[in-house]
Image 1: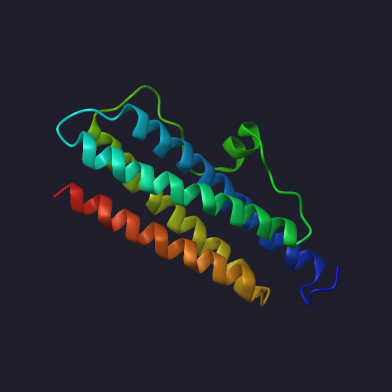
Image 2 (image 1 turned 120 degrees about the vertical axis):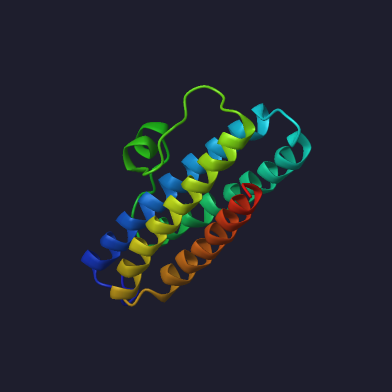
Length: 153
């Protein structure tokens, strides 16, 4: 492979993207779970918001995985691999709606931190394509976290 990024740098960027993929997929599952199971006075608003979020995340995980493949590295694709790589921990049970919002806020903030680490690797490798993808993802998660924080008053 000769795309202007040496093998070690490509592998380092891909390793960071794998964590971002795992975090994004874990957040997708978390959001989808909450979409299905939310109850209470804000049901409709949260049900629809969570659907918007998991739909956006479904597209994102594909883009991240395809970037990993573009770098010549195999993308993780199992629950086991994602659970080992993700910084987001699964939630047991079904929390109340307001707790769901707090959990999702923290999860989006965690993905922002993952993006920051991945961005450093991409910038260090002069990998503008990965940096652009990561930067776009960071903006989405920062905005989503802001919107979720706004629901908390």
